[in-house]
Each structure stands twice: as structure tokens, then as C-alpha cells.
Length: 507
Image 1 (tube, rainbow, N blue to C red):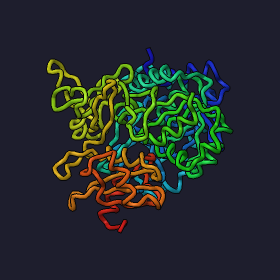
Image 2 (cartoon, rainbow, N blue to C red):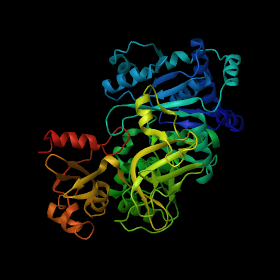
Image 3 (cartoon, rainbow, N blue to C red):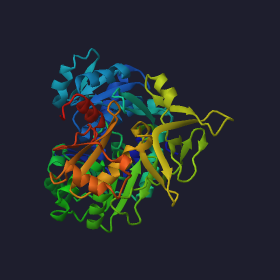
Image 4 (spheres, helix red, strand yellow):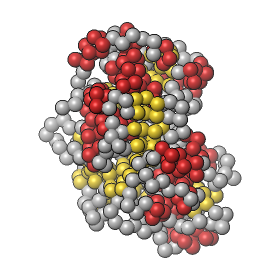
């Protein structure tokens, strides 16, 4: 039984020492070099003489960043990735919550780190690489490791904008990795095209799939996602076989017609995660890759990346919603209506229990107690479940359908409405590339933001919606954008849309 993720690295390093584990445009690390760099970082951190303490890492997204993560683990501690491009206030808020024993930076992030005016200790990764490896010290640390030790803390803001640090353990990531590698048939021959930032938990799958199987991960340059033709050419050049991207990245490629120009034959497995994948754009991808495996994956950070999945096996019309499917192995996902199980077709809140669950939020017991609660179906012994705040239902096939965030459900003209249902209908309209809705409670108006052709006028959209949703669900205000604002994770930034609308920025 695996107790520590380093067992993946050590086993794979012995099997494929000179195989490239992680590569970027300018650098690469073999499994042998990855372990060496990680042990140097771990040996440096041993001097602090502590265990199960956080180490903040604010470096460029490189193979050595992964070595930094694993080095923290070698030292008996856990890592927390921070993006240097985040606003200063957000980074300082994260550091104040985390109180890391040290902040690791590299030369490329030096200027950003200095602008923080951070009072804690800061170390350069390059200096840590000069450390002599202390195998005896690292071995002693490992002997006391258990699988419920923290592996990482990743910060998520949710709908409030206030960062919350989700604590994830070794056992949770091992649970995820074992299920994922078997379900999607991973081997050492896989070449992963990584899109997710390292501070976004979706990247966890990419990283640990490499460590378990001996596959190679190509870190795709971020700027390529602004140039779809170059992006697809890059996938072809690197012979990428697997991608697990946010839907917005996949939609840009579909909407610009790039699939007709360049569709790499190496691509065999395509997954999407993080938000709803519009079915219209999914169908564009599927038409180009009829033999590929497509998977719709769902999961909150608090449930260690994924808790449900759906491998698409039947046809869907553009205005149908793709299911999020079924619970991942060794995970129980259920829908509660109050304190009872929802019946088929009945809307309720999606809840999760199992080894995948985070222990809670770092230095935030109040939020932990709100989200991680006693299972109301089990009054007999302590058992925590996580309440996702996501509304869902079972369809006729027994598959779970994600509807919307609980705070994305509104009461309008006496009707309870899921804004996500309006978005699904809008996204199925031709001439529209993407759409997002907010509700202006003050004026009681549904506001639609959309990107697409100027020919998609309000009259045109309403005509197309007539057969898709009831009239009371029609948007009252429609705003055409040049581009949809996205969060750092690549999701539609509804908070910014709402703030800008309230400030009158959109007119």
C-alpha cells in the first residue's frame, strides 16, 4: 500500500531513469534528474527541523517547479503553489493565512517577490540546488510519514473572492491517481499536454500520472493559448496524446475553425474539467476525433480534483447538457434535498464522502465547519461529507447532471431559475461562441454576456431561444463582448462580470 507519493517517483525512477518526465519549451528533467533536484530541495529544508509545515513556492511554471514540490515532500513538509502574476493583495492574503516556514522563488520571479514587501524568509531555488543530498536525513523523515499527512495546500477563492487554502493529503492523491490511471488506461507511452497552472488543482492529475506511470508531461507555453493554430501545431510537434483542459481553451479552438486546419493525429484522449463544456463545441471536437475518448470530469478542489466522470458514449444534440456521470471509484457522490436523498429528476445539492475529501481549510476552522459536516444520513458515528454548493439531479439514465452553483440559482418573476440552463440554451445558438449570465437583483433583470458575431442581435437570440426555454427565462439585458473575462484558472469570471456591470462599465 502506497503511503507517500514519493513512492511513485522512486519506483518510476528505477524503471525509467533517463526517460523525460517533465519538459517545457526551454528545459526538461529526466526521472533521475527530477529525483536528484527534489532531494537537494528536501535536504536544504531539513535544516528547519520541522515536519508537516507549509512551504510556499512562487516560481516559474517549469520542470524544476515540480522538483520543488517534491522536495518539500522529501523534507516531511507540504507545498503550496503561488502564481507570481496574481495581484499583490491576493498573494499577501494567501501568505498571511499560510504562514509558510519559507517562500521559495527563482530568479525569474525575483522581481515579483521583491514587490510583495514580504517579511518572511525567502530562498532562491537556484541556491537550494547547491545543497549536498542528505540521504540519511531524508530516510529518517520518511520513516515517520503516514498517508494522512498533508501533501499540498491549494488556494481557491470560490464565489466570495477570499482565498481559502484546501488541505489535501497523500492518501487522497494516491486514491485519485490509482483510479485515474486505470480508468483512462495510462502507460509510460502517454504524452500529456499540460494546460492547467500548477496553482490550479487540475494539474495534480497531470503531475502524479507522470510519476506513477513513467509518462511524459509537456508544459505548454501559456501564450500559445492565445494563438490556436500555433497551439495545435505545438501538440502535433510534441505528439501529445492526452489533454485535460478547461472548456474555454477547447472552445476557442472549436470556435475559430482551427480543427479544420490542424488536428493532430496523435491526440487520443480528451478530457474537460473545471466548468460546463458547451455541447455545441464538444460536438465540433467529436466530429473531428470520432475515435478519441472524451470525458466530462467534475470535482471541487475539496474532493481532490475529481469525484465524478462521464466517458461520452452516445450522441448529444447541441442544446443537451453533457452529464457529469458517475462517482469515481472509492468515492460516494449523492444528491441531498434537505436531509434526505433526492429522487430521480429531483434537484438537490451534490455531496461527497470518501477518502478523496480534504481534512478542511488551512487556518480556517469556521469555513471548514460550514462545508464539511456530519452526514445527515448517518446519525450513528462521526462521518464527514463535503457539501459542494452545486445543484444537480439524476437523469433518466441514472447519470448525474450538473445544473448550477447554489448561488447561481435565482428567483425571477415568481419562478426558480437555474442561470446555467439559460447559458446552455444560449451556447447552443449558432453565431454565439460563449455566453454567461448574472442576475441583477436590484432591477430584477437577467443579464446575458456573450461573444460571437455582431449578427447575433437581441432579436436573433430571443428568436432562437423561443423553442429552448420558457419566456420567463429570456435574458432582459444582452451585452456583446469582444472577449469573455476569464479567471487565472481559465474559467469564466462571473464575479468580474457582475462587478463591471454594477459599476456601469458595460454601459
